[in-house]
Image 1 (cartoon, rainbow, N blue to C red):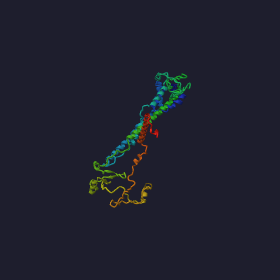
Image 2 (cartoon, rainbow, N blue to C red; image 1 turned 45 degrees about the horizontal axis):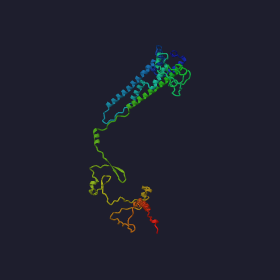
Image 3 (spheres, rainbow, N blue to C red; image 1 turned 90 degrees about the vertical axis):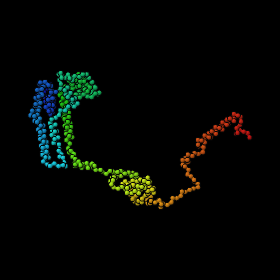
Image 4 (cartoon, rainbow, N blue to C red; image 1 turned 30 degrees about the vertical axis):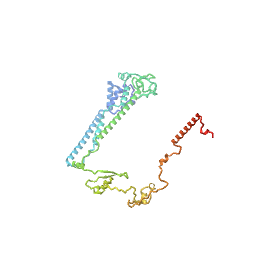
Length: 433
């Protein structure tokens, strides 16, 4: 078999046995191996015979038939188990008396999910190739085709391009970065690409650039990369479908409604006590209370005297329970209750109570209060001057009006002296005695 493959590939038997056969053994399915061999050796009658013989040698019919029958057996077994489980469940359900408040039976769908996953793994799905796979397939086709055949015309470049930057301006070429003849560094701007059957080295003008041995190595590398991408794609698809099955068969029982509709309607019509929020204006704290029943008498109704007094004064104070309080006209808001000094220090820090006297303060009713002292009068101070008026006062001669008057007086005196000099009359300062 190695000799026949070598005659088609133009390689010796040792090279085929060391480089080609090990990579052919990496294929796990006969379809993938057959496709690879057709791309490698061609589609002629002789090549097809060699391909079929090698596939039959690699994958015998007995193994293929056994592997193909495993999936239905597993599927039938799982289906029988599921059907037996369902039939036994229906029998027990029919024999047992039916209860009104019976809990629902929680079925675990793990067996069904496992059976579906096993069936899907045994029958893999044909997934479309990704962009990376298509690029590898294109490079594989370029390396596998014979430059002298008619199939190579598909890869003929429309506009050839030559570049000698050696990777300084452009990225390095993929799959083949050095010329096998002169060792020139090849960049990605070359057209056709180095793996093309029409490729030509811009330095030594060899065409194609890849030698037969280099082609075999690159093809083996491309096959490994392609199979790895396919395996990753299959693994992601299996994980995606398993996650989909888990989400579809979630292990949560269906919620049941306990009780009759009459109980639900009675609960819905039952009124709950309302909550009332009260804000204390002194402490600025909010208290939550439950509203009392309407049948309970309120404090305001039981005490008509307080309500009449509040209405007459126009001041209404409401307590937390909703009752009205009588407003004390003698309350000046500065009452202090006697609290022990030790209790004050325990409740509050010393710094905030430094200015507070420790003497107890008592509230004195208005009739019992002593008369107020008479205001102090003095003969010297009759009225307290206003501070604003004192600030507005200015020293003599500093006001704008005084300065203006002095300036006008000086101007008038100067004009008078000038007129006297013109008339010949001596001024008062130059008169003789």
